[in-house]
Image 1 (cartoon, rainbow, N blue to C red):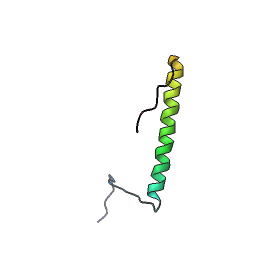
Image 2: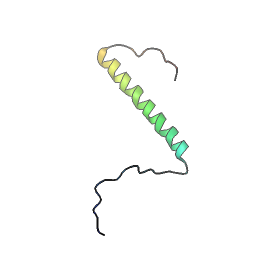
Image 3: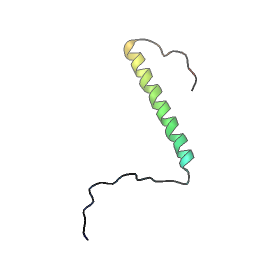
Image 4: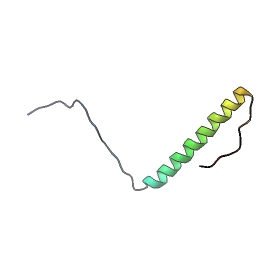
Length: 54
């Protein structure tokens, strides 16, 4: 019986170094968020406040 695929769902990939890759991605996202916050502060002519807790 020939059928056409009309959707694909729930595909999941694993990697042997998934935890270390996730840490790298988290650090990249944090750096990007800081750069964005600095640009916003620069535009508003204010300083970035004290660091909080993560």
